[in-house]
Length: 265
Image 1 (spheres, one colour):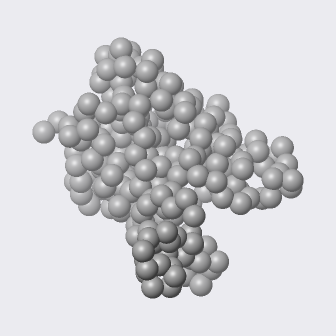
Image 2 (image 1 turned 120 degrees about the vertical axis):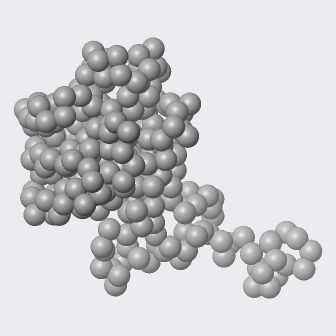
Image 3 (image 1 turned 180 degrees about the horizontal axis):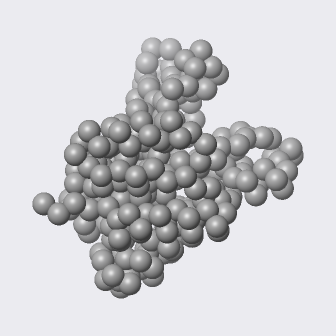
């Protein structure tokens, strides 16, 4: 079987690393992009190679145009073309709305939206040039659809990422190029279990956080023939976190019956 090529941005650790490793088990050679952690990037690449795939680590700051040129220049030098781009790299910064600065806004949008947009453009240009029916997967967040305190900048950037994916999917369909967005919820990437973020866990209908490998398996399915008719789609993987309109304890009485039903207290 002829192997395909995939570039995964921000794949030294966490969800990106899991995606790179999972794809390598399903016929993809991998470009492992990283910014700061070369050691972890090399560990990801080593896992990819253990699966019989080719891997190259590429240091690049994709928030800048020069960094993106370096990234794709090196990737095309090694692999020639590209079958799959996974826009995974992201920056998370949170602050109350009244305290948000332009620097904070610019830093989040530079990576979470602008970099993903122009990485997608670079990949799509190469795919169209080679008449390749390629795929771009954007890793967004359920923050694109839900609202959380202190997340106005992050949520706005992720909403923009989800939206541009739909628009670009419409334009690129004539080339046979597809774009799909994945919106993970809370994902345990090694957080301190005693930290306040774990207070959110009981509020998630499935009562747990996702594992990076679960997000990776979703991406791998979307990159398979089973999802070949999907484009412009958005897949939410958040354990049902966006489902409740009001907290569960507001809906049910102490006897477990739904308020408004006979016997509720």
